[in-house]
Length: 127
Image (tube, rainbow, N blue to C red):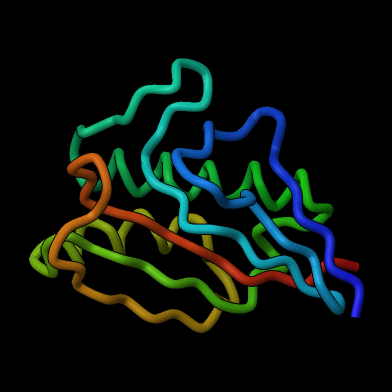
């Protein structure tokens, strides 16, 4: 099995010892992305909609660096600090996957890093 780990040059700065992505056996596994602005390195603690949009933009950036894209996503994991935010997150999420959305799990997490409300990971096909 070949395994290639990488970082998106224009992605958010990693805040721990992890890769943005790992490519293995035709799939790319994207680490959890939160609402960190890659340009400034700051966390956006705006609305849940704003955080979701930035998290998904970061997922898209990392997928592109790994040679994939949002339309090739097979599965996402969504972590919410408060399940009451589900409708707001879900509305933005639907914008990114308007057709044939990937399988998804949404989990309420007791707390997320840096006080964020949303974190999203993904698995996609690399062709």
